Length: 436
Ligand code: SAH
Ligand code: SF4
Ligand code: F3S
Image 1 (spheres, rainbow, N blue to C red):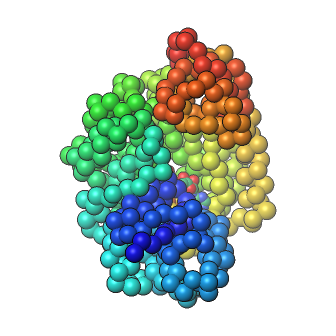
Image 2 (cartoon, rainbow, N blue to C red):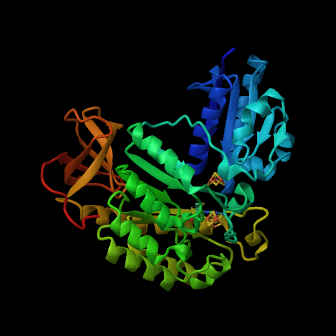
Image 3 (tube, helix red, strand yellow):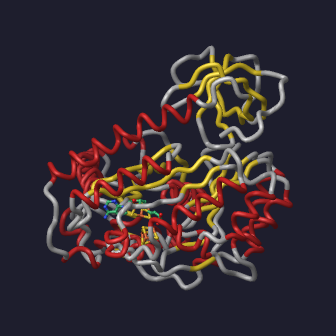
């Protein structure tokens, strides 16, 4: 008998991709993915524990779903992802109606866990890097590809090393086979996923892997996330030389204060970071750089915060993700004194975001009049007369629908720029060199 599954996904791209793997695995066990929890025989929460807010969002949704159990006695509720791994048995204390709790390393065992009516499975999986998943992908153009799992960095604020386990790299042969297959099936873009792709190690390092992937010939290759400490000159050369590797680097800074960076256990200084992006910008003209910032780390003074603002003014990110520090149990920063109050953190965040908004707008406005390459993804969200796509620098580009198909790569002359998107028209003119 076929059964239906619905997944709530929270958190980062890794979770988005893990949900695709879960659907793929479950479809081999007789499940079909459906669009609403009401139709489901199995509801999975693929959770995120990075900040308290993400965790709260999941728990309140979990509470709301309880009533569905009264309507459908056979409904199973499962909790997966980082909160599952972190809280383990504790999930049942908060929500006794949950049937199964399993960790990010246990996706391959999902059908067995369900058949055996297991309640808890959060074991370390030593074979994770060798596991192959049949993946039900959301898109037929752009694909996520895991290159490594886990994280060994133990940044003092971060829960990920505890939820995702120790760092392991997938064998290059399986990464390459997956990408060859995607290319053969018409995919145009892959995004390589890992918490710190620069520490990829198999029979080759990450730049080596990029070169092999480049040779496959898929149009666009992206990767995330890079750790500034491990971003090597060799990687910069690979990006500069390989035509398929997109001109975009997400390089989280976290703070502009060396004192705070040290307390965060990040392993670099602001000037190290500046040096790295100077080289990147020199070798890869027009590269877009995005970053992450945490405001309100314990003990962050007004002076530390001002250093962060100075840094973002100097760096001029194309886009920035900024977060208020959130205390995570089990991390080494958890017990630090001098926690900032919520209002203080909110004020610092809002003020920083305002500064960055102006920078993002200004950077985008520099693209007015240039010609950039756009991969068409489909109809624009708000206006069916327009198509939407992305530049190589990962900016959203809107253009009038001229009958282009999804997956087509076209040149677009930019005629208008906004904070979150660019607008333009298709053109035969050549790409503007060193545009970002
Ligand atoms: N592995 C990636 C990032 C993973 S988490 C990296 O190292 O860059 C994504 C972002 O969430 C981090 O870059 C950081 O800015 C933020 N983050 C992580 N833990 C946090 C916490 N406890 N409070 C607030 N933000 C946090
Ligand atoms: Fe967390 Fe640091 Fe690992 Fe990123 S590198 S996942 S911030 S511990
Ligand atoms: Fe990702 Fe959240 Fe886990 S950001 S790795 S899903 S804690």
